[in-house]
Length: 271
Ligand SMILES: Nc1ncnc2c1ncn2[C@@H]1O[C@H](COP(=O)(O)OP(=O)(O)O)[C@@H](O)[C@H]1O
Ligand SMILES: N[C@@H](CCC(=O)OP(=O)(O)O)C(=O)O
Image 1 (tube, helix red, strand yellow):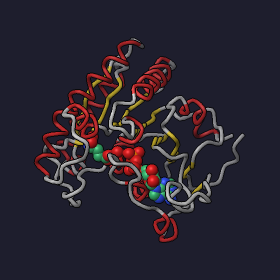
Image 2 (image 1 turned 180 degrees about the vertical axis):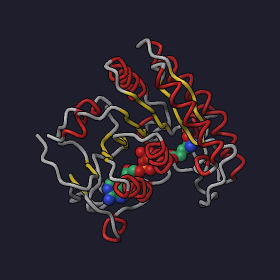
Image 3 (image 1 turned 30 degrees about the vertical axis):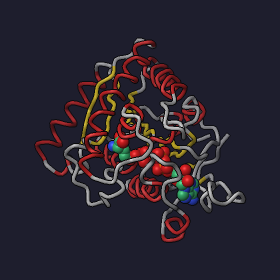
């Protein structure tokens, strides 16, 4: 059993579009509800939680009855703006049900590079966590200027979640996606792909088997999840990648059960 996971108190959870939106484009209400239930239960236990949630563009597409993501950056940003308020409405409804307060925090990847902004952002997190409010973070897609291919994608919450975990000095980053963990090849393409349960270092071999996004709405795929994991490993923090189809999996992770892929420097025996 991994004591560091069981004792983790400050936890960043990242949930991807693929877990929040069905392949047909509709909102996955089950995930929203189970996520709100799980994080509320942990919050009541005294854990400090930050949720990094994608889904603004996915929810925006659904709201505007669009089948696919526009290629034009402005149109994507407009959809993110439409979807973000809807996304927060969905979270507010579900978290209200469990009597948990939430807050919206929109960030850019570079915000922590500016000392003043860094201080303000960290103060905001501290105040929210002190008051038992769960911050729900997304990239501020309207102003984001990441050097990515803006034709098909912009922003990347996998790395943003690692940046946040790093700056708030989190004990653990949990990334929920539509796969059970990190495989030796893309499981959506190769039926004989094998799940890797522990990764202690990330180099060209790992990046070599990490493909792009598997869903219509996800963006980064496994490449950006590995970049997030690499940052965590470099700082001797832990990251677990697990399937977000049922976010109650977080309880199993925090009980030290062997689920998903754990990225950690030392190898620790699971139960
Ligand atoms: N080696 C791999 N192991 C697991 N998944 C992989 C791998 N390579 C590529 N993928 C793809 O990464 C996808 C998850 O990334 P993405 O679609 O961006 O999800 P999310 O919206 O959760 O961020 C999976 O659905 C899978 O198709
Ligand atoms: N900020 C964008 C998400 C970008 C992103 O990283 O998406 P994903 O690969 O689903 O985590 C949105 O909310 O749609």
